[in-house]
Amino acid sequence: MSNEQKITTDIKVPNKDLETLKIHFPHCFDKDGNFQLEKFKNNLTEKKINFSTESYGLDWLGKSYARLLASDPATTLLKADETHNSKPENVNSENLLIKGDNLEVLKHLANAYYEQVKMIYIDPPYNTGSDGFVYEDDRKFTVKELQNLIGIDAEKAKRILDFTKQKSNSHSAWLTFMYPRLYIAKQLLKDDGVIFVSIDDNEVAQLKMLMDEIYGEENFVIQFTREAIKGGSQSKFVRETHDFILVYAKKINDLEFVGFEKEELELNLTDANGKYAKGRELNKWGAGSRREDSPGMWFPIKGPEGEDVYPLRNDGSEGRWRLGKAKMKKLVDDGDIIFEKRDNGTYIAYEKLRGNKSKYTQFISILKDKYINAKGTEELKNLFKQERAIFDFSKPSILIKDLLILSDIQDGDIVLDYFAGSGTTGDAVMQLNAEDLGSRKYILVQIPEPIDPKKNKLAFDFVKTELKAEPTIFEITKERLKRAANKIREENIDVPAKSEKIKCAGIDGDHCPACKGEHTIRTEQKEAIDLDLIDLGFKIFETTPIWEDYNFEAEQFDSSQTLFDAGKLIEDDCISP
Image (cartoon, rainbow, N blue to C red; front, side, top):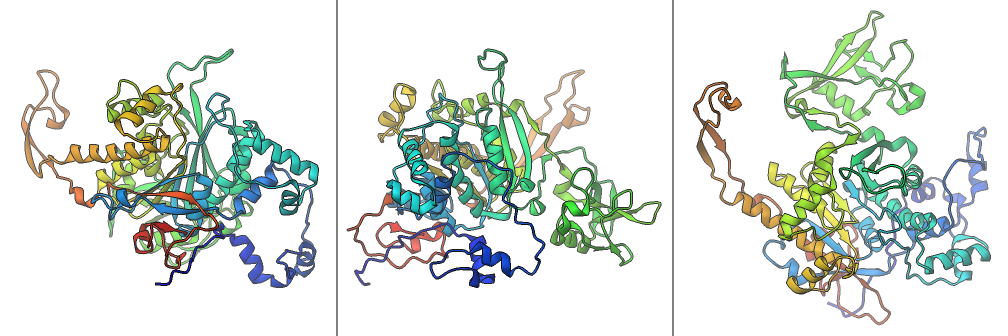
């Protein structure tokens, strides 16, 4: 192998929109690669298109700088933790924990995992004023450099640079921090992917407008209200007990939620393919149900006699389907649509629910009781064997598990959390895999933020004394994942793979429901879990700076590879996706 240095130093987020323009309108770019808007307008065949300069949107000091950060090349490499990764439980793992600034990490992931992530959950800083959020940026631009890069005047460039250096926690600072991280995350999502963002009152209004801009207002799914605490925190006027989870699809017409399990739905109908239940209407009703609201959802499907059936509304006007062409075609091909004829001869279509689908119903927009922070606190206390939680405001794993179920995360799907905190998302993925022997994968990102001994002495002492590591939140994340995996092993290692005699627990006048009203000794089948089928390990990578005289032997990086294949690519512990 040659000793020649071969490092990719221009790691950038793919820009599909720009590439599309270059493919279809190459003549609208000048020799320096600048897009010429006037030339583009003049080349359009439809001359009646109105290019309005007025629009509704969100603007703030630093927005142009935030856009620069989203497209600016990464300034790091990713280095493998060979000692950790070579351990037996980790060597073949397809889970990842990455240590570093999540903006840098996202730029690496945007190449290796472009449009491969099914679900993102993040719990970013709420910017409450007391949560420690301040905007920090180690990029060093001069006023003139920033002027040239983003096309602003000197006065605005100076104001932006001033606030990036003064550790601000203003709305502008928070939006500048969030914009590039949400923008790049969108590039990672599959077309049927979804992102969940936890937030509270301090920034929910700004976040909603920011998400509308990046993901598109039409891709908004729901704003969950979650009961966070019982009783409420101190307030001058109203005791606040809640926060929110904003949900956006990558492409709303490709998104499919399945919901909670519901045992009482009976498969009371039968056809040639077996038992089924009548499900929801496939014709869209209410707001957004007209053809013009979503033209791509107006198309024919084959009816019961081979005729074309269109989504017509009750008044006979043109409507739209709930599902896209591919999903509707599959339902037709599988015989999973009920066609009911109206008096006017048109059809309403319903989905047939079979098997597991029959057990699901929809979430409601208010999440209560089992989702409160106290459940997450109790989990951490038990997991770390401490009298109080080692990490503040951790979400309960049941919240993430139910969001995984809601999003229909299946074998092979990738779940990303780039504000990993205590590692709840990774814990939830492993728990769900243990329940159904699934092979879902997680990618967690956590910056090695120092633990302040004045604010959390318990965590500081635990990491320093028991873990013998530098007291950072990353070490808490890492330890949580290891302990969560061990808990799953311990809970399942002695489960017998045989029938077990269970004595009725009922007493006179209080019969055991499982005994159907009679005191009996019944047999229950308990199956052992093959722990070898569950990925309970994880690989660790961390960002490391690129410096000018950096010298090592490395094979040329193939950007089509993922970090799960990184072991095949690393010669000297460093890779550059």
